[in-house]
Length: 409
Image 1 (cartoon, rainbow, N blue to C red):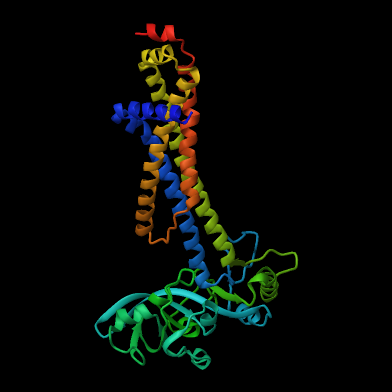
Image 2: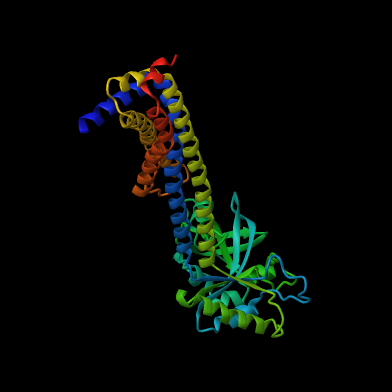
């Protein structure tokens, strides 16, 4: 039996390599499909991991309070998010920090250097909320906030850009024609604070920003308005309860009727993480389906070529059957041939998939990890494609009678 199968395998390989170009074109669909499946699964997994890591660096127990971008028009007198909300939220047991957040852009000037930087008008709670720290100098103080002091904490990258090798501490820079003294430089974090990259920005007291720089919230109807409030919950496992407490507190500060609608919105990083991962999964699934369609098209190509091969080799089939080959031998020969085509295509596809994965991962700066399951699934699919789409041509070949086959021209 083993000798018989080995002989059939040799015959199949000989038939394939007798038409190398046709075999290569036949396997092309399998190659593309397998490479696509491996690349999509690996890159999709790396993307989800990258998203989770990026958000976890900022803390998944972060909550944002803001006015909705699509505020319900039925709310007649919506209130801005203000420092009144911040102070009330800080009193909650489930909150460890609550910081005002107003983002804008300024040209920061020092001597002959002028750089456009993002500026965040905030207070000292922002360091605890985002887990930022000062590497040199200090943060601005509560007294400086209350006194509208013109002080600044600068990001590590911004400090290097503006000052180079010069120590930035106690140096004076100009924002919108107003001088600010640099009192601290933050530790490089490599992460953003939801739209604000501390490494490439500056921090100023929100009071100074409001009064002296006329910094306003994005949807402000008054000078008291904030873009949002950044809140750090004490316990991630209790974040939903904390959000309920915050909502009740803000409803109270905004004097909303018990039956009235909220004029604010609460978001948290946990929901952003799940939403982003869900989007990445959907995209991976979509691209995986495209890869599966390529496998299907490749399988149809295998079946088409095998049917052509049966027609071309009808006399050969007749001769083999005349000298003793059984219908099973003929069927097995063509099945092995179609499986060999598919498996060779699958092997090449696996190699190309690994190469594409490494290339895409490097280009997108992802930590892609090749999954053994992705390789095994792709290999299994390519073999299954050969069996599924090769069976009918093999069956058709095995049903030929020796006399009809030998008469075929």
